[in-house]
Image (cartoon, rainbow, N blue to C red; front, side):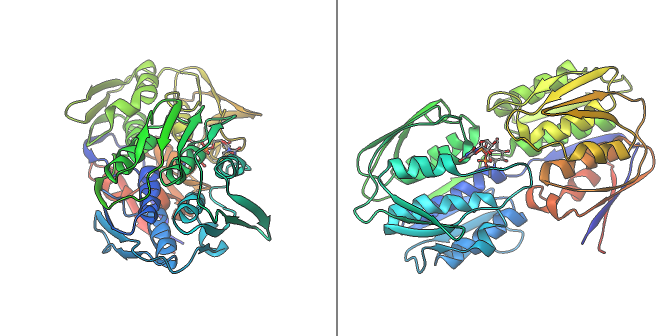
Length: 423
Ligand code: UD1
């Protein structure tokens, strides 16, 4: 298993290009199942998660042309050869569960394993199933698989989500595009990736309105066409590098950044005393911190437009060095503080009490061997390591490869001393 060695204490300086959004790309790839015509996605990040999904789609009969390292992926689901998404593939990544609705909409039946995914809590799929069932599908959960049938097709439905789940909103939206009649999704999630998916679906001929608000309306159409779509930039990757620059200090400009989607993250950084110059039209965010100590800021994760859970670990890494005490409350996932004990190994002072972590800022962190536990937790260790004195070795970095494209290159391009070591 690969490790990362990081020699910290070096300010960062330079430019970092932001890749396409992983969480958007995954759902856009699934959308290719809805049409028998070619779907071309550009600005697609080459990550282990997007590669896993490409493999699953290929198992279902989708022709995938995506050379290694290429940022354009061609998908063609002219004929589907299987409607079974096996455990071995779905367990690797939760977003694969979203093939259920499109398979049902297109083929009338599907057999999809219940997912695995990051070890950050229970993460059930009840809201997904509630929506698909409301659209008239018959569902049976048997031996770890959801067996679904909608022999006469899916029907438009009124779904009121008890919680704005990103995955369930996208799943229902995908399925509803080919359903008979109108679907209304209330208390829908408002994440920018949902709006990106709607833009792509509408370009395929779907009738989706309200994506990005809490009420989404979808009028079903009989068939969708192919599309060329550019994946939106990754707001979590952008926020992560912004926090890395804030932690290590220096002067870093993010290029191709989704400025409008970064509101809560950039506000928190400004509150911590970091200079943030964001240019929406140019898609750039400049992060500057020279010498001045960070101020402690408390945050609570919320569905978008609140502070994203996917940046909580990174912000905690930053707050370990702040002047004062900050409280971080995790409201989305119940077990998302696995990074706290690892950050403590670097000298951080963190006490976890249920859904809250109390972080007393220290003046310096010191390098140590640490273990990556999940995707966002791993990168929080990289951030802390960049700011720490001495060497940190981050083990089990396959978690990082799930979600961060060319992480070492991007950081090294700004002067960070980061090297990957094969075990
Ligand atoms: C997506 C993102 C993930 C992010 C999360 C929240 C992708 C591929 N992943 O995950 O990076 O952290 O949004 O912004 O886009 N829940 C249920 N029942 C369900 C579905 C969800 O109880 O059927 C709960 C989950 O356990 C969790 C909360 O709802 O506590 C939020 O989950 P959700 O918004 O669905 O996250 P994902 O779509 O899995």
